[in-house]
Image (cartoon, rainbow, N blue to C red):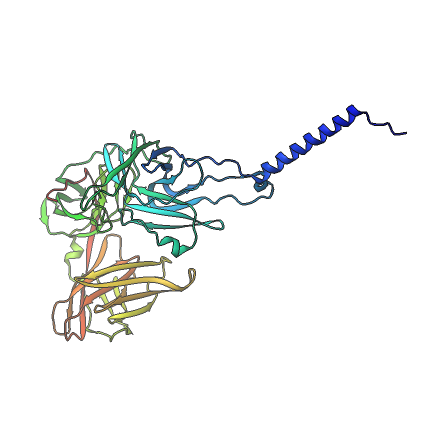
Length: 493
């Protein structure tokens, strides 16, 4: 027989149901309402005059860089296993240091557009360096990101980005710097904006100090020579007497860039006797922080974090080089018509047949495409160059997306012609170079001896009425000479 509920029991049941309902409601609200996300305060913040903030999110070093943007996750996101905001990633080759920066309101996780920054300056280890590359990471709904990069600092506002890539929300900058030595003390970053008035210096927007990132290298303990400096290989001594600045590198219009290109005054002696020589190849330059620069001072290396270690491949006289047979001359090669490719089958034999130059094809002015001539590598590349004021473009690429199909070599120029050739065998101590190009009337032609990732060409500029060319090659013996020097001084700029 059911017992009748007492008034007290009824009240208790109502209270229990109400409490359980309230708990359920709170759970539901918790499930569908985002938790307050942490602000983009990062590891160092600068307050701007407009009330917003600029914060360094992280500093990373190496070749692979990643950053996880903050986000608002709810219990419903977790229960439904909704994907997280993807990480931002950037690859640097060779390794570099990347400073991740965002402008924000100090409350939300939403990064904002920032058009005031022009330069970012780093002070560390007694050196002052300006970023010479920046990357813009934009969030692109529904869940991806896109990025654009430029080595043409200063940073410039690009409002047209939004029309190019569609609706966006969020923007993070990455400023690329050289690696700094590990244990080198404070790292101070200064953000600089546009100066007031024409020609005015940039104004300081704020400054922040950041901790040392993982992945840095300790100084190797090199002892740099001051010029003149010498390097010895066997009985050959190469002396670097002085270095002459050729100005700032063409890769940036940053007026604060410390990248400089240099020419060297060199002297070679063999067994104490002076000999004529020439630079055949610039080796990689490495500074004491572990930064590496292809062809070093030839292409422009920052004059920071000395001493610098680099190599020069030099022509060195040997008995074999002084014997006959190290110089060869082509037969006359007719110049093809515009946009025309003509297969060539001749060859030139040097050093008693051990070095054989085989012609592949001649190309006329305009646009000419060749089958791949260096099948030993799958590298795709593009190259811009020139002879005087005449420009050319060379590309080794596949026409099938993304990277399928056979590779092709394409040359484009309005007035230059070229010969593609191959050289099957050269020893480590031999170097083949083009020494002279003439036309069928005996006139000297301007030329470039082109060698890029195994592709060899003679590119030349014909004269009015030129109908053919004659090419002269020489095999020279070479040695690598290594130097460790303090960064050269720049005078008269």
